[in-house]
Image 1 (cartoon, rainbow, N blue to C red):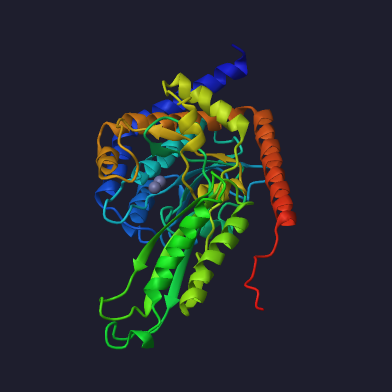
Image 2 (spheres, rainbow, N blue to C red):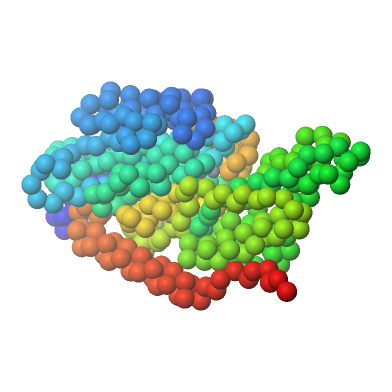
Length: 428
Ligand SMILES: [Zn+2]
Ligand SMILES: [Zn+2]
């Protein structure tokens, strides 16, 4: 083993030791967040608990309410006033829960992983305080609803970071799962109320518009690319059978594998929404959410380094083609990958339960999840050390990031060129 390889190995041992030593504190942290589930943008207790953790640790510069009420930033190492280049490594924490079922996506464990990996990396570098490295933890709220990372990106919270890491609980270890672009849309129909039996002809039925809208989209589904997804619900369907509904509301999620394809799907869906209004005489409002979630860009070098570290720690990454090709959700981490190179692997937490179920909530709070949570935190910290101690790897990461972004821009350009205006209703 060469001298530098030997010292990298020592640093890695130091990172693992630091995480193991903090085991009880880390477990208590995620358990506290789990016990008090809070919805997107309302994660005040989780925010305070995480801020308190870093304040008590000492040595961290902590910025509570960083750009958003329930976001925070904690950093260790040389600040921006230091002369010469500083490599900034970011670890992201999520901590929002789901309505009704608590931490069914295990975001309490995501918070723990982010904190643990940062504690591990700091522990390894502690005696090398002169290394120009800054460890940054960003508390990013509202992943399940709204996209807090997108708000933070818009406010420059990721500027200056060279690489970002996070990990998401799942039912298996996976290096990568396809994360697709997504945009939420709310459709509102305004009609006119009337007695449904005495004067139905005086009414304009907004429920008919909602039903036609739902059916139009269902018909569209037959012509969609197999990789596209449109799924929706009727949120308001009227008040009483004997009142012609004057107002109805639907919410849809539109998804495509790449953000380049999303405008086309949005245009087709919007045609369905508007046609229902024309057919019923209702007024329609189509309102897309403020934030669009992007697909995730992949950085092969980061994945390879992480895979080697994870495998050495006993992680068992799935090779099931069906899982790797089809399991797709959306995350605001996708948007981050267009700004900073990063990875977002998935980890088994000791249960076969599926995310977003009550069984998963139980598993995310179970002590059994701790071993897997700290193991992936170690794998992330070790991957950061690989990059820091081998600057040529970091250069590779930057190159792959630029290539991935250019490829997406090219895709967007060609989609735009092929884009034709929506077919209108021709009048004779
Ligand atoms: Zn989720
Ligand atoms: Zn999640």
